[in-house]
Amino acid sequence: MYKRRSFRLTIAALAVAVLGIGVVSFPAGATPPSDVRPHGGSSPKPTVVLVHGAFADSSGWSLVAPALQAEGYPVLAFPNPLRGLQYDSEYLRRFLDTIAGPIVLVGHSYGGAVITNAATGDPDVKSLVYVAAYALDEGETVQDANTLGGGQSDLGANLVIRPFPGASEGDADAYIDVRAFRSIFAQDVPRPLAAVMAASQRPAALAAFGTPSGVPAWKTIPSWYIVAKQDRTIPPVAERAMASRAGSRTVEVNSSHVPMISKPLSVLSVIRQAAR
Image (cartoon, rainbow, N blue to C red):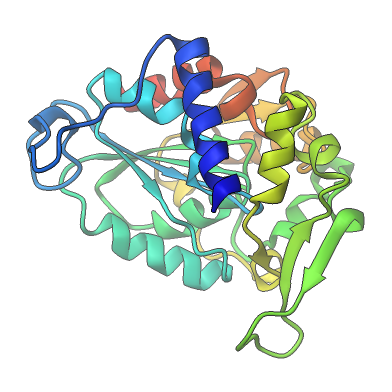
């Protein structure tokens, strides 16, 4: 608990230092103004739903979310279960059904695979934003996508596997070895922050990486894609291949796998474009 709290406080401090803003907050019992109310209120801007990936949690959006809130966007950070592609996508689909009005759906890493499936057929999702993420095609798995364009991920050789109660046969939780976390996941993040990210990472069930994807939402919904040029989790060549296949408006950023932390202004710029 202390490590997670320290991580969030560190991220919040970075938000103030890097972006010059603070997290929007309200007194206890107060009602937020309509332009930042997540449910039911009228808003001139779409709701931005942020979906984290594996080995992370929603605190990874703590630089991006307050900046969007300060600009009047309703923002929700979806707590991705990381239990498997079908389960996670259905959970997000039902989550989106509770939101009134247009939605901009943003996915990082494995979160991209989840938004690709959850948004299919949803008329309220107006745009998709992939942040160094898996924009899978029908029948494709996360493992398959890592090899697109001849790419090779450093992730597989640096996983720690741990059992969890109720796992189906052959399934287990996967973590990135804390000794390799920064070099694979966040090499351009300050070492103290990367160390806390490694210690507080959320595991993903192995089933999340080997389940074939359904009909992709990017076939009918406009998409944007941020390629992380120094990514060692998803090969940049694979990211470019997925972006091209999806017909995404593509921006390349000189960052690790976590541009929303190391290059938040670039990520904000793309989300704003998608929100228009």
